[in-house]
Image 1 (cartoon, helix red, strand yellow):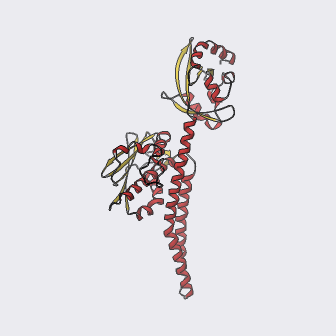
Image 2: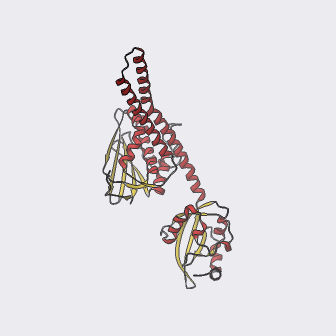
Image 3: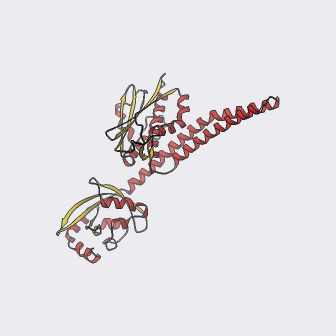
Length: 367
């Protein structure tokens, strides 16, 4: 194993190269075969708040925090050819986000890796802010759904209580009627409690992958929004060809689908047509899972098809849309779900296709 003295000497052999590299606006460093850093340029040292001497001889794993050791280790062992994002830690314990590319080179008969790093911390923070905005907007939407969902059972519970009181006053109350009404109230309360559980699960800040059936995921969504769709006379048709679980971040996919379904609902309400329909289809073919959300609200003007994925662009009336839902949906799919989203007009409306590439599946699992 090379010691730090040898590493410093190895770095000195390349001082002319690093004079050139230091003139670039990218953070750079070299790693030897033992994954130890043999030299760095000024920008990389400054971004992490260390001197060059404090970094040389360390591994990249030693420059991250406990939370990100596993991901940085995996990156160092097998760097993707097209680069990847990693998180390092500054000397004062702040996280810095980098997009890193690695190139194998030979210098003075030594095989080394040249790391090129772009600081994307500002972009990541802005994206996190937009995601929080999107989440808050969707939470407000879901609170409205819960209020709508609870109105009917609350009225029914109140009516049942009034009925029991009147029967008691008229000496018509029987033990059978008490049992029947009590059972009804308990069932209604449990359904209302489940609605709150679904909402709480949605608001938990997690991105862990878990095994989910798409049918179950859609059922959870419709448990919140179904009554609202019925009140607007919107018919929902679901056609699923995926009968095995996917291993993906459930909450993130749920966020995307809720956004697409509520957008379809709003478009149908604005269209004010007699027959309103949302069609959801799932399919799995050639290691690609697609989830399509279609409506018959007239479609999207061609000039808006790309704009709708831009932040703060909305076609809704003022106060009815934040303009970040579709933007964040596309970012979530790309960055967290290895996916993408496509839009087209068909069958008299808009069709949004969520495409998940190579999701981990278990085709042998059954419900």
